[in-house]
Length: 183
Image (tube, rainbow, N blue to C red; front, side, top):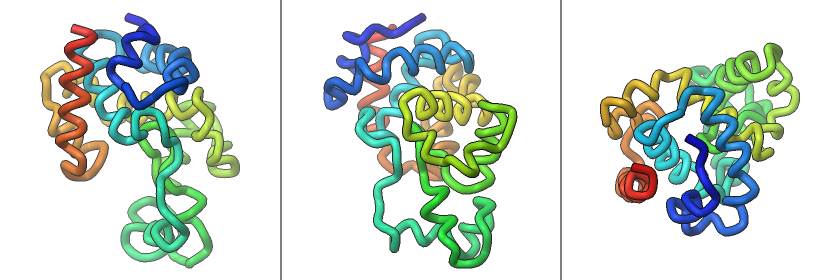
């Protein structure tokens, strides 16, 4: 079920011209990763909408000091970044429409999308519309979120993406709008 630009603009009123820019890549990525019926698409778009600010951001917001939290310590280790303060936190910050974060996630995403590790050398590729969408759909699929969307388990989906319920009210608002437009 391909989305139309009009539907995407209704779901993401703040997207503006970015709706037309991202639409082909979104439709392709959703088809590639079995996000292929209204319940799945609505839940996916709600989460992507929150994580990307309705397609406005494909790179995590934050200065070097903020991103340094991914560079050393236990969080860095969990993400697969090196334990030294060498810039891994900035290099492998959140990118794409679901904000793939950390060396381990970049590596897994790269293997899934390309069959190699090119994203480790070129993480900025996830800022391009095609790969921003593909990485988000890969992340969704790799965490089994289609099954949760089929069951209407929206809060569980949010926890898988965010680690908690950060931004839940906006996510729920986007989900309601997406269901209204698509269902």
